[in-house]
Amino acid sequence: MSYHQDLPPKGGYPDVQWKRNLPSRGFRPSIYLAIMGVVSLLSVIPMSKGFRERREYSREKAWARLSLLPLLQAEADRDYVRRITALTKREQELMKDHPDWADNKPVFNDGRSRFPSYVALEATKN
Image (cartoon, rainbow, N blue to C red; front, side):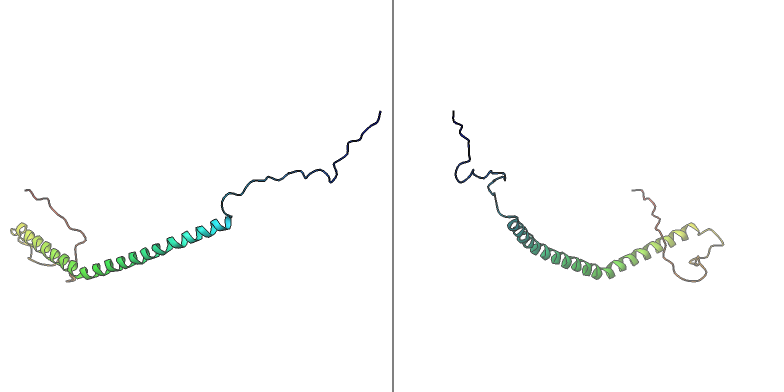
């Protein structure tokens, strides 16, 4: 009986495939990064225009408030005079029979005018 030894084929066996051979899907990551950068830049441009516009609106609002300030101050002064006059008349009406009460005598002795720190409103019956 003759023995036959099994030998490799001429030229050797083919290489064993040990790496995964997946097909590439999509672009390289650097291209995705570039696309994200372009989209970010294109979105910053309208945003900066909006910031400028908002700053201009706030500046305009501040100037409008500064322009209205004398009018509002005059209105507050008129309201203060009206309230003080009404308070004085009410005080005269209440104290007309009191012998020691002096009309329009300052409450404080230094002669300075002081604004009230609060306004007391009474409920009116309609």
